[in-house]
Image (cartoon, rainbow, N blue to C red; front, side):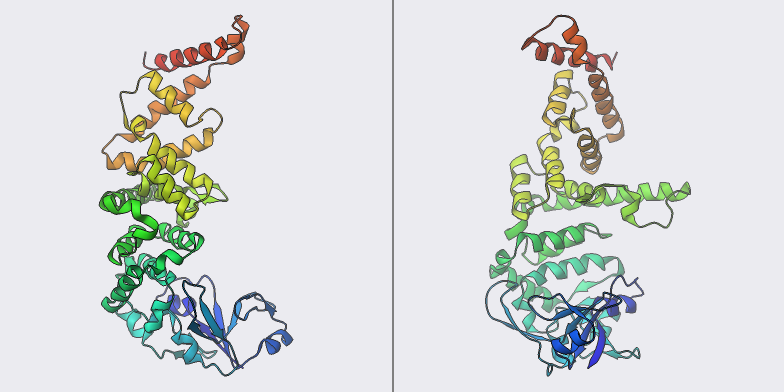
Amino acid sequence: MQVYLVGGAVRDALLNRKVIERDYVVVGATPQEMLSQGFTQVGKDFPVFLHPKTQEEYALARTERKSGKGYTGFVCDASSSVTLEEDLLRRDLTVNAIAQDNLGNLIDPYGGKKDLENHLLRHVSEAFSEDPLRVFRVARFATRYAYLGFTIANETMALMQSMAESGELSTLSAERVWQETKRSLLEKTPHVFFTVLNQAHGLNDWFAELESNLDAAIATLKTAVALENAAKENFDKSGQLENKPLETKIPESSSSGTTTLIIRFTALLAHLNEEEAKRLCNRLKVQNQLSEIVILACKFKDFLLNTQNSPADLLALFNGCDAWRRSERFTLLLKAFAPYAHYKDLDWQRQQEHIENALSAANQVNVQDIIATGVKGPAIKEALNQAKLDAIASIGE
C-alpha cells in the first residue's frame, strides 16, 4: 500500500497558496485493508475513506470509463492493480494531476508543474470531454487564478467549446452548476467565470438570459468587487478588520448565503427584468433568500433609481418589497442594489438615505392611533395608507 498527497493541496503548495484541505490517493490497497486500519468508508460510487484521526479523505486509486451521458455516466475500477499514473490520467487538468509521496517527491507524469510555472490550465487527456461539469470547473479555476495571470490552453478551450456545442451541459444537475457558480462568485475576479463560459459557448444552457447584455452584467459585477475593495481599504486605513478574509469584512446575513454572494449575484443579474431573473434563479435552484433579493432588485429597479419618486411611489416600493415585515431583507436589498446604481452613475448613498428616511417615517405611523380616532373596517387600511403617505411627504419639508 502506497499513499500520495494529490490534487489541490499539491497545486496550491506549489503556488505558495494556503492549503485548505488535503486529499490522498491510495495505491495497491483494497477496501477491506482500509477498513481493517480503522478508516471509515464514505464514498458510494467509489471507495473513499476518512482517516480515523485526521478525518481527511483517502481514495483508492481508480480509473473511469464513460458509460452514459452526463457527469454520472461512468464505470469505475478501483482494484488494487490500478497505478498512480492511471489515477492521475483521469483527472481534469494537468495542474491537478500532480502527486507527492511521503518524502516530498513530486510525481508529475503529465507536466502539471511546468504548466503551473507557465500559468496554463490544460487538460490531461481527451477523456476530459467525457465529463461536462469540467467546463464549469475549468471556468472556476480560471476565475480563482486569474489574478496570477493564468489562462486556458487553446486546445483545452477548443475542447470545452465542442463539449458545450454537443448539448452535454444540459445533462448536468442544477445543484452542481450552481455550486461551481457560487464558488466562482466569491473569488477575487468573479467576472472571469462568465467570460470563460461565454468564450466556451457555455452560457446558453444555464445562463441564456445573460447573453444579450453580458458586457453590462460583467461591468456591474466588477463594480461590486471594486466597491468591496474600496470598503476594505477604508477599514484597513482606520485600523479595523485588518488581515481578515473577505467573508468577515461583509457580515453574513444568514447561514444560507453570505452578503457578499447576494451583492455579487444581484449585480450580475440586475440588468434583467423580473421574469428573466425568475427563470434563471429557478433553473439554477438558487436558494430563496438569494433569489428573492435578486428578483426584487430587478422588479423595482426603476423605483430604486428614481430620485424623483413621489410618496405614492415610495409607498408602492415598500409595500411591494414587504419592507414592513421583512425589514432586514429590504436593508439587504438596498445594499445589494448599490453596484447597479453606481454602474448607472447614481449618487446611491444619497438615494439610499432618502429611501431609508422615508421608510423610517412611514414606520412611525401607529395603526392603533388611527383606530383610536374611531375609524372602522376597510377605512382603517385607507387611513393607514394616507397616514404613511403624509409621513413620507413630511421628510422633504
